Length: 112
Length: 115
Image (cartoon, rainbow over all chains, first blue to last red; front, top):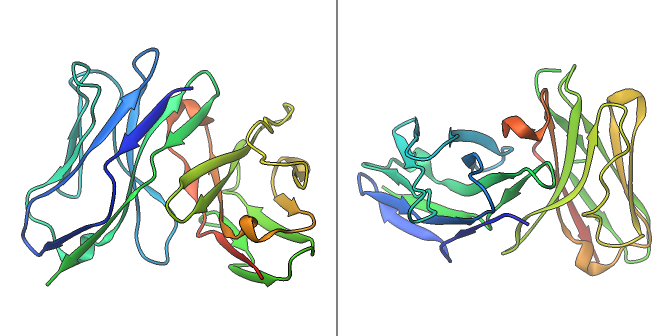
């Protein structure tokens, strides 16, 4: 089935630093792509999405661009805050199985 | 309620015991999903309910796992004869339009620890 792959390991950075979390996908077609975020003690929530190639999803200062050429949907934020500390999940719609397929997630820790 | 509600939030059990986890989806949502979140493994799909259709059980890891959804609303995930490898956070999510929109609303999860 269709799948997404996220970069390995947690990410630790200082406040106001630039954040990038890599996500690549494998799919037979062009699925909609998503980033979900899980803040400490809370359920996952949708952060942003893109439904077709070259679309840019954005929310709360985060951005991700759907790149068909590189099958990627990297998440970026120019200046992180301590409140951005969370686990971030990349996901796609697996139309064949009618479900969301998630990556393994990346723990992001922002240090003051 | 305002969001997806799961109970219990934490459950510690002994190996071999049965456990039941409950999910109350957002009112009116027809689609309901169970996922399992294990350390380092991301989110693993377990089962999907859509309206009155037969559920998609293809993600259930063994026949010790089962789930039902009564009246198109509340769902219960049951794990029989629990094993230590069942320890994980079990997440429930609901959606008004099914997975094709991609926007799922998650509960906070039920953390299961099997001793």
